[in-house]
Amino acid sequence: MQEKIKQLLEEVNAFQVSIEDDLESFKRKFTNKKGEINQLFGEFKALPGDQKKLVGQTLNQLKTRATERLNEFQASLKAQSVSSDRPHDLTLPGDAHVQGARHPLTTVLNRIVSIFERLGFTVAEGPEIEDDWHNFSALNFPDNHPARDMQDTFFVQRNPDYLLRTHTSSVQVRVMEDSEPPIKVLSPGRVYRNEAISARAHCFFHQVEGLVIDKGISFADMKQTLQYFSSEIFGDQARIKLRPSYFPFTEISAEMDVYWGLETEDDYRITKGTGWVEIMGCGMVDPNVLRNCGIDPEVYSGYAFGMGVERIAQLLYRVPDLRLYSQNDIRFLKQFERIG
Image 1 (tube, one colour):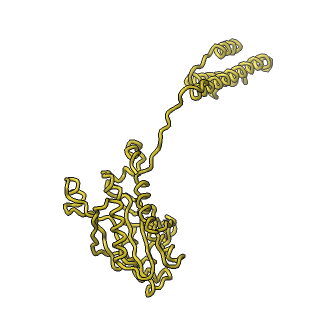
Image 2 (image 1 turned 90 degrees about the horizontal axis):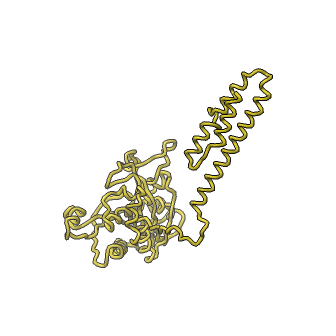
Image 3 (image 1 turned 90 degrees about the vertical axis):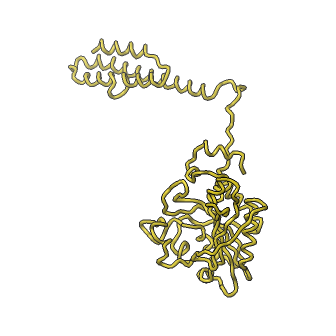
């Protein structure tokens, strides 16, 4: 055993390490639990008592030397790493700083909010996990309304009275409950729907909803506001039209279209050959909603509207696949460095 210890000591002293792989080889051979030094300690236990004192002393010296060499190698490699990462010559040019860019959805959202802020709207936010009252009941959704079905809504499994909000109208309810008219508020945020993910749909997206409550508010006031928004976001020549529709929380309700044109094949595809593209829903706030929120519908009236941020971004940027917005692919995001 003494000869084996002497041989291993020579190998430990002669071993050289220049890269991490060398260090791992040293550990495997000498210092790990299954290394040769630990094996010698196993054999040491079987020696006669009169030999243990002499052999034990040299075996401990071998283990100590192997540990010293391991520490030396680790310190050397660490110094090399620091030296390569931080050169001592501070006059050398540094790494180029890569400037970030706003996400395209953030850019579009900021533009939308900015337009309505110029009209006097304030911004309000609310929780993404909502209760049934603020997301549905206060907004005049009957108990048997299809939007309450599991196909559309993510409910909290342990407590079905809570859910991931399906629209930011819930924020408007909270504002009406806590504020006295006049109210002029914008509620942007992320919403969730239980839908299959595809190039044209996702299980989460972003909305901007607006609400105006005051005495004498009319449908004409809403149309004027939305015409101004469309001209600001799509250009001075933007034309809009309002089509009758249905939403539980507005009466009368409408869908708003913007004229996109039919100049290119892409225009035909986007507008389905009509030249018009739908961008938002809107309408006069249902009196029941006002009443649910403690506002007298005999005194006050109002309008509300809501749009998808991704929808507006698609029209501005012509991105072919909605999933690209949430995949954090730097190649996609770099295209928007100089936009907005």
